[in-house]
Amino acid sequence: MNFTHQVLDSVAGPLDQLEDLSRGIRLTIARTGAEPVSLALKNAAGAWQGFLWRDGDVEKPASGWGNHATVMGYFVHRLWKQESVYEGHPIKGGNHGFIRSHLFAAPAVDLAAGTLTYRVESSDIPADAYPYKVAMRLIFSLKEGTMGMSFEFENREDHPVALSFGWHPGFAVGSLESARLLLPAGTYRREMAPGDFLDGTVEEIPFAGGEMPFAKKDLPGSFLLDLAGVKNRRFVLEAPALGHRVECDYSEAPFLTLWSNGDPFFCVEPCWGLPDNNPPVPFERKKGIQQIAARGTLTASLKVTPTLLS
Image (cartoon, rainbow, N blue to C red; front, side):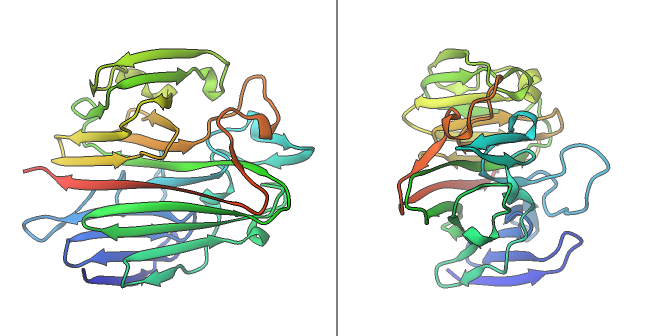
């Protein structure tokens, strides 16, 4: 494999672009939020085709969802009234936590391995965003035509800590109507969340496998799925309108969120956590919260493989 890295200037700040010349795959990441803003393959004609919503366009849109693939942490989705309390410490923040607006330093680049590594030191965490000293490394990789993403959290406290995290990618589909999301067999447990907050009710959905059993018209309300009853956590999104196929290997993720606002994109999100409750509960008791032992670490990873259909 032959990798190159370059830094691009943009209206959104510096962009890091990692390309595998031998495989014709390219990943572009904005340092604000360490957010992938383009995942592209080179087609037979030598042109790049992007797989993310608004792929490569970092101008702020006049309306609609303006992101591409948001990184979520140290909580996911929403807090009740944008605030919570963790062991007496107040937490405040908009959707998905502070990571999405955090300006990361230049990543560590390893061209031999094909990786970009971004860091959050515990001293970088805003005082009202999370109360404990927990550092994070976010590692992006290109390998054999697949984008990998790994989270590594390091608890520097002498007591356990709790947090949640995830990834919110929107894949371009050209036409939401013709797009197909293929789910593996298993029993899906849908966490009901009217108004985007858990109400404590769960719907069990035994499924034989195939195209998702959920109505696309309901995607704006999100489908929050507990995957405990699903062994093979590989999900395939087909977009015939664009000639795209994306395989999402979320084997390590305990939850999956499906969302679209009706525009031609489909969010297939691996999550290590869930939204807040209505009524709210203390942060450390949020459903799906992840625990890290004193002075311990927590790692999690995912893979996404884009393909151009013939």
